Length: 254
Length: 201
Image (cartoon, rainbow over all chains, first blue to last red; front, side, top):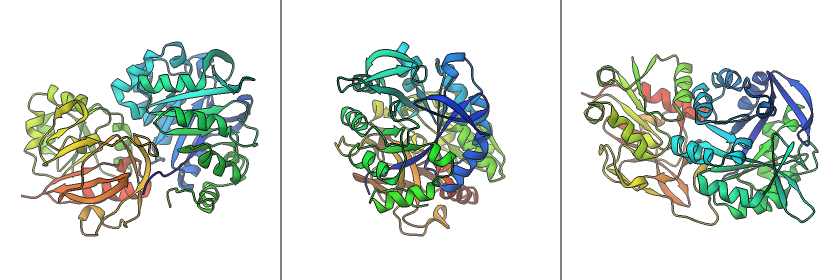
């Protein structure tokens, strides 16, 4: 058996709430993240991904508490991101029960943080989170602070640099596609996948099974994140797993 | 029953403790050789680099020697399993030497990213007490760039480009390359099976 694709439930968090936006904006409150996390674990999510969408804007978040609660009920890997600035922040999240951290803004501002986290906890723990928007030139620009600030960095170049510094995985969120249900940015995912030799998680845009198939087969994603399709119960993880099987994508059989 | 979890400073200790709590077993996180010796079962978790993990163990006087002489069931997880062998290519570090052999890095391949990160199937012939109620083909969660080759100690293997040891056993010493604490129901069964093992005298 070779490559197996992971189906990840993504929970965007603001304060104590699970929320969802479109293009990372216009956030709507959905509910208590714990209830959703438990449901996704029981449905057979391969991993959970928590992103605090305002933490880097307002400083400290409630993520540690949310992760600690989840850790009692969730026995699949949990990746946590949002507002992480230091190795100490990472230590606190791991102690609460996180397995990996996803870092965007602080890594852009101080790339050395990637190396520090990888040295202390290993590359497998350090997920480089990239939020990218398509530019006219057919390239993608990295944004920080949850899609609000331009960085001037090219997404593909930044992914390559992040891996050199020690990131063990890349989470790529397309700001253009996020929350639209119009499909993933397959071209972006493929550009990143071809540039790096670590696993790539595609996020943003799932609407129908064909989108999953496209981002895995053409985009070469190693893992795919799902949010509102799950939150609004348009499909369960079992439905997504069945869609993957139908498309002959190898996934865990639960 | 008293489980000692050796505090190797790794990233998976919290997850492991929650998984053990869920089984209703008391555990203590420790580096105290006396407490490790007194435990009925010992788990050596490890996440990160083999050299870092080894140097952390070496910081506590007597701990490495204690681990080498344990008679009770001991389970190394991930890097904790890799440390059970003689040496690792990762940092060219001498390890605990409880199991013969050397841990090596996955070969670079275009179609398979390293680290091997995700769910993969266990391949085995039933028989090990650690695999009770677990079926060949069941999925468990792996995160690693290094692995131990298949050998007579291999109880279960997995394949990622090449076949490697997913679970090894030699006497009271067990090693799991995957993360039982993150492998949902199957991982929980494995931890339960481990905790049901009796001390060998």
